[in-house]
Image (cartoon, rainbow, N blue to C red; front, side, top):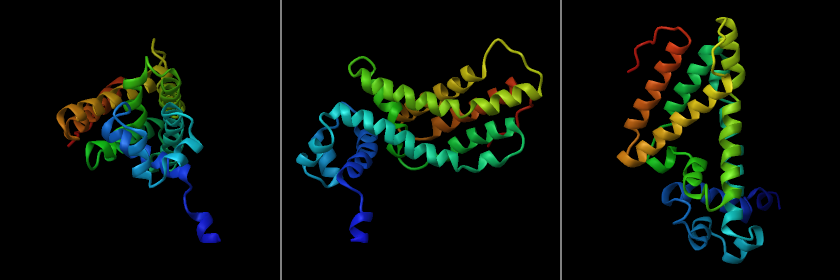
Length: 207
């Protein structure tokens, strides 16, 4: 009984499959049949948990936020004393995630929102919620770094946090276009140098 209870249910299997299949094929090209095959569940099980493919898309965006949020919350950059160091180490952490094939390191919600921002408002809103909430986790460190330096710029910590996500999502697009992580890593390096200059720190050499 204990072993059976520990096994993921059909809903969890479908959400895990969605994270992989949609990042590989895109949302529009992913079919319910493919999701069921990847999850190892029946089509009946799919429609037991999700009325439509779009309903699964919303749930997948929320599931992505939950799983990646836990990973970022446990990341070592939070242990650094200086808030700017924490922010820069977050950028380093993001660069370190550029491993494996393109579908393995690109963002599920970034992929989905590009395809659904006009056609599926519920998915668009779920993707916005995911990206914005993740960006919000950076605001306190940015504000603290600004305060330590007596900075009162025209821009806000929130706008810089969102800009950071814009660069990262753009880096994923370039990786898809070029077929590899190298160009994305270069973009992340440029982002780090920009942030260092913005806060008056001489950029260190990035190899």
